[in-house]
Image (cartoon, rainbow, N blue to C red; front, side, top):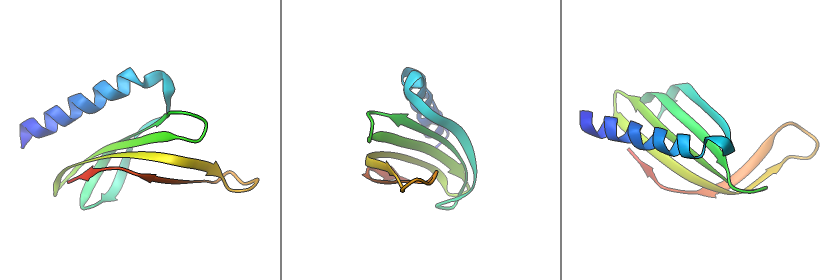
Length: 92
């Protein structure tokens, strides 16, 4: 299990560094994510209305990996809020 965590971190940071110039957001989240406590999160823009939202979460339930393709990403009227619709794999 320890090797899986290390491999996951290496893959995530490799992806993040290769797409760093396109990253909208990179950060760490704290809270409850499917039973895990901490998540390293990244959002990478693919086009005007498309993006990849990936995260790796750690905690009591092990390691979780998400890679979601948000293919529709638009603002809600004149507000500062946006909505997105997407699909992708989640592994816990």
